[in-house]
Amino acid sequence: MCYPEGDLLVGDGNVRLGEIGGCPFYMSVPQFAYWKHTQLTIDVVAGRGGMFSLEGPEGLRFLTRSRLFTDAG
Picture 1 (cartoon, rainbow, N blue to C red):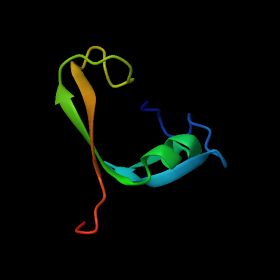
Picture 2 (cartoon, rainbow, N blue to C red):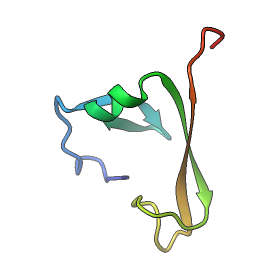
Picture 3 (cartoon, rainbow, N blue to C red):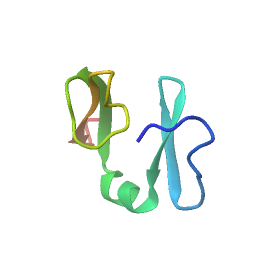
């Protein structure tokens, strides 16, 4: 979900993974345990999705792609 700055209460149950477009990106600890061996790419694309707050009148949605990390990178 996208939240305005200050609207998401972040605590020990969250892991900061980095930034997207200058905005901090967090994942819950259980989600991180599941995804920690993957590279996640999060894009914004045209179309309708099912769950994220970016949707609505903008006609945009998030698209997440993942791949496992390997010894090669």
